[in-house]
Each structure stands twice: as C-alpha cells, then as structure tokens.
Image 1 (tube, rainbow, N blue to C red):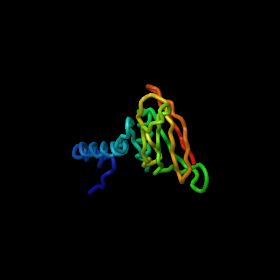
Image 2 (cartoon, rainbow, N blue to C red):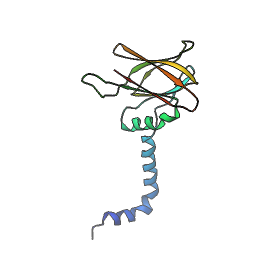
Image 3 (cartoon, rainbow, N blue to C red):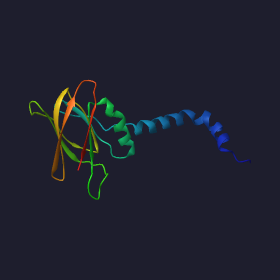
Image 4 (cartoon, rainbow, N blue to C red):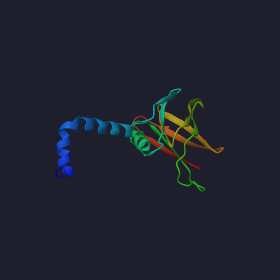
Amino acid sequence: MKPLSIRTLSAALVPVAGAGLLVALTTVADARTTLPPEQSSGVAHYVSGGIGADESSAMKQAASRYPLELVFAQRDGASRGDYLAGVPVTIRDNASGKVVLNATAKGPYLLANLPDGTYKVSATVNGVSKQQLAHLASGAHQRIVFEW
C-alpha cells in the first residue's frame, strides 16, 4: 500500500470529519476568548482576571466595552515586570465618598462598568496603597495602570 501524503489524507478526511473538526476548532476558539464571569458590587458590574495567555487576551479584547480598565503590575524589585493578582480594589464616588465597588482582582486586569462620573480608585499590594482618579464619560474608555 502506498503511503498517503498530508494533502491526500486531508482530502480523504474532510468529507468524513469536516463538520466535527469545524465544531472542535470553533470550541477551541471560543474557549480562548471566554471572559471570567461578570460580578456586581453596588452599582458597578465588573470582570476580573487575565491569568494565562488566553484569558489575558480575552480581557484585552473586552476592555474597550468597559468604561474603566485597571491593570496591576510590579515595577520594582526582583519581580519587576510581573503582573499581579489578588489585589484589593476599592472605587469610591469622588463627590459623595460612597463606595461603588469593593473587590479583590482575580488577575492583573479588572474591567468595570460604572455610571459616568469621577471616582477615586484605590488598590493595595503588600500594605502599600495607591490611589488614582478616574473620570468616566459616556462612550469613553479610561485605562489606569497601578505599579508597585
């Protein structure tokens, strides 16, 4: 029996396995773009994660659909350049001081859907808190990077 080339083998399998292969490839592609589940805290809806290349890619692709994108990274020391997870985050309405989101980031990205307004965003790593203001307006996207 003559060995089959990849081209011949592919042509022979396409009618038989084409539909199954298409379903399998679609499932793999969907898994790569699946975000962690959306959570809620007060008036805020958010998604947090980004651990692993696939989830990180999905978070980056989804970022523009959320008014606020937070990123957590290590700037100094031996872990310089590493992304951080497990970062406690508090977001307060800047005018009233009321907490609108209180969560722990499950990965280096936290995407939040909040009403328009100005917010004080606080994040803490190893007892060191950092704060930045976020100015959110309809149709706009703001990215804030916290580095320790």
